[in-house]
Image: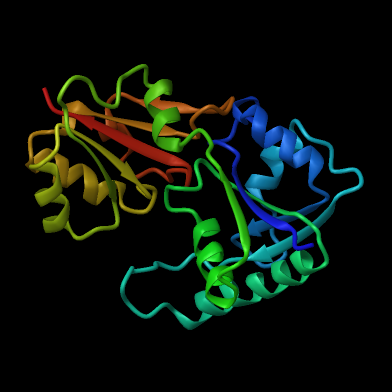
Length: 241
């Protein structure tokens, strides 16, 4: 009997934000397939999970996924595609033995998660692969909570924008939105601050670093973040008016 591949959101960082369902599955599944961004590096997802679930008796398979951009509808970087293929091969062999495999992913699996690329690769090889997705607390929701502000109210329009987009594309999306959430801001803060200033939105922006963690920082004046090394786990919320 074939096993099931579970992609489980583990939230933004605080282990207490794992859902009850995620904890139950992590306790039950003996095989954890853990994503890592670096060769022989650690995994933030594994660190979060280990805060509430024991690793004892678990087979932990660590796999590196290169941190390179993926543009939907375009050819994928060969190194990235190869990482997905290798992951799918390892997971498929476990599932064929009847083992359930769990893939812990940061935040929510539906939002820019490597887990879904792996799902697509698995289904390409075998459309009958059993897959289950468990939602988690997103960095988007957690950042708004940390800043004590709503994401959207009433008839407000919310957009989620990768901060690495070209300036003109960001401007177009901002003009359609009442509330904008920027992800992947850590490498482009200075450029983003200048852009928001030109749009008259600088004072409506809040930056949250390491949301939900003990060392989280909420920047109410994002000018102060310019020229600093901003953590990878950073999200910005911009509200008009």
